Image 1 (cartoon, rainbow, N blue to C red):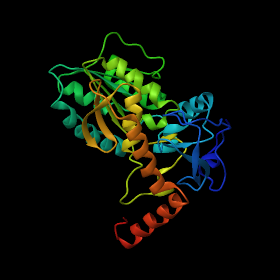
Image 2: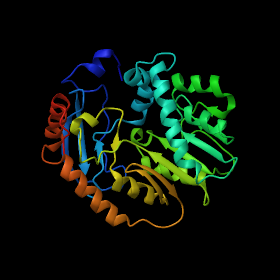
Image 3: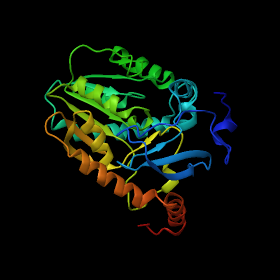
Image 4: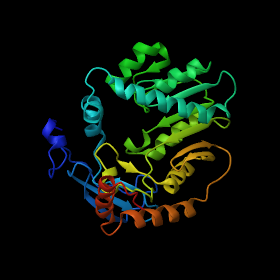
Length: 303
């Protein structure tokens, strides 16, 4: 991949990758419906919806080697304009988010819980949990934010990807905040989280909600870094395929899972497909985008 500023910001051009056509990254069904040919920057990006579970995903999907270059060299600048350290305004936002997430898990955790943050970014959740007295750990594959976290938190944080990092034993809580949507194989990642949590731990996943019916952004929610786009139902489906079931619903796509219980996989697939089609099929992704933009100008909330 040959990166330049224009390759990621010049509208009506494609992203610098080749990729390959794939089946649904969650349920492995091959049939899909067309969603959009453009993302929020009006760059060409083929988005499709799974005819079985409704997952909206990039197809053709960037290859692993293409993603490795993107995330190691370009991602943080592309999304937060960060080159060597995180921006102060992003750090302030992350602190507020970490406080909200800590409040959501405190009631279900034992004292001195052992926790792991999957893709910990600049480390606010790891730091906040440590301040609460927990044995808090994390890993981050990106050098820019990973190095910042290590400098701040020491050996609580490793700079590595989820396939490479190693831990002994299990954790009371494994968290994954706005990371799953960046992965080519989200179900395998969820299986690894479930393994780290064991039979008695919890897995807390939070991702953007692509099932919003009020104020849906349409193509405004699509961009190169988000390979898989979930609603509530296909997130529960993906977790179910990894052996996890909802324990606490913090938000539609912010869910604390456990290994106890079973999800109705086929029901989740049906509901996920129906919701995605109602929002993104037949050109709705584009029309919803323009309705959302008009609502920002008029101040009227779009339904």
